Amino acid sequence: MTGGDLIADVLKQQGVSWLFTLCGGHISPILVSAKARGLRVVDVRHEANAVFAADAVARLTGVPGVAAVTAGPGATNTVTAVKNAQLAQSPVVVLGGATATLLKGRGSLQDIDQMALMRPHVKWATTVDRVSDLGSTLERAFLTARSGVPGPVFVECPVDLLYDPALVRQWYVAKTGDKARSLRDLALQWYIRRHLRKVFGEGGEAPRAPRRVAPRAPSPGGVRRAADYLAASQRPVLLIGSQALLSPLEVDALAEAVGALGLPVYLSGMARGLLGPDHPRQLRHHRKQALREADLVILAGTPCDFRLDYGDHINRGAVLISANLSRVDLRKNRRPDLGVLGAPDLFLRALAREAKGEPARAAWMETLRARDAQREAEIETLSEAPSAGGMNPLRLCREIDRALDPDSVIVADGGDFVSSAAYITRPRGPLSWLDPGAFGTLGVGAGFALGAKLVRPSAEVWILYGDGSAGYSLAEADTFVRHRIPVIAVVGNDAAWTQIAREQVELLKDDVGTVLAPTDYHRVAEGFGAKGFAIGAAEDAPAVLAAAKAAARAGHPVFVNAIIGKTDFRKGSISM
Image (cartoon, rainbow, N blue to C red):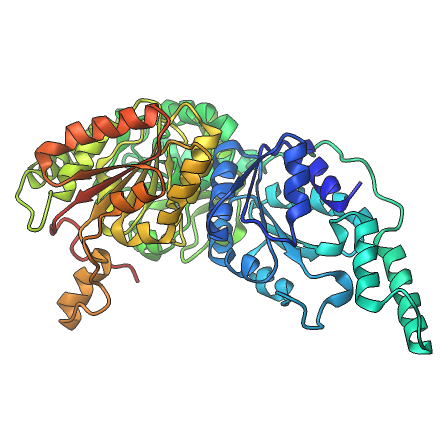
């Protein structure tokens, strides 16, 4: 068996269904062997999107997603996506090609210190120097990615470990000559033969079944204290973040527990959609005001980072309870009154069992609901107002929300337009919203959508693009066409990096670097073989979106170019 065979056997044993890649000679045996074993090899047009797709698979299934990239530039192209997975706590395994073991550091093609490059951005980075170690190393990589606080890992696989040993020996002979002409030649041939015996030595084990990794359970004492705090509270607020969704198979139990707690709840990140679109306890607006008025705040899987103004959004007089898998995130920027180290979903499920009944909080809930209703009415009014330069973006977001199928996934990839969509579109169920997470990375759209549609082939998968972010992955329209992945992409096209331009123009009186062209993105996608549609006016949106949905149902990837205008809806939205 070749090293490529060994790797493919482990991938199959670990439950991997898809291998995302951009081809390269350093990794070709992995791709061929994976295909031969029934894995679907999905090749993309940029390595970052291979990692983004693997990230989406991990988030939606709980099984680490896998990307294989070639050496040098192939690895460097993944760094942003790998860092995004690290900050999003997503278990991803990246297989990196590398120069031959005997040529490291000698100036061979694409030979760089990949370990130094990757170590700061992963849970574990390692290189393998013997074929017999490939299987056990990869099994450890999967275990590491899933254990504790999940995250990405990087395994470097030198090229001479992957190909047929006889072929590798021929390569080395071709480099050195098969006849010794001097004492130096004899010494070199002896050294190479000894090295190859080490590389191809016997050993190794058959792939083993994945080890079960149980998420850390919260302490019973911490849960009881939380229940006591909750029983005494009159104005509680529950904020659930992405980390609470790290066990995809348990999301229904989590949703049931949250409903049983009966608390006002705000959902952020991957947690959006957990309770469906219209749950009576779910709130969508004026979160900052609610947190500042609450007497008890429970953070389940979300830290006090910039999204909560480093903890300053939360009333200083409130009891703060935080449940988190990460010791660092548990106390980041603000020390909680009660910090519970453990899986936040398990904490909420245990708290629902321990809770001592609901005190009279009707007035508090009614206050929050009234604010929500008022803001929804304001958004409806704002969405009907004229918008200079194109369709009102809020109206477009409302039309998209009306068009969403009950079984749908929204991939958020953009700044101003997509952030507006987060206020307006309502994910239809658990695991139906994918955004980059704390890193705020533009460019996740195509990769996330690719992974999501493979995991949920019957679901309607939407990419909401800003026209700036669309540029990062527009070429993946080719990938969607070649692999028959019928996603629906909507580009909110206002010909600008609007989220940056808002503050830059007001504060610095210059729009330099923020102006784009009103590009026909749908025609670009059509050039790759996708179906393209354009929306120029609000009254056209329902019919165009309906046509886009029909084309996707017929198996075609779709790109909708929506010309939108400017609004003041998100004025003052810059993050520091």
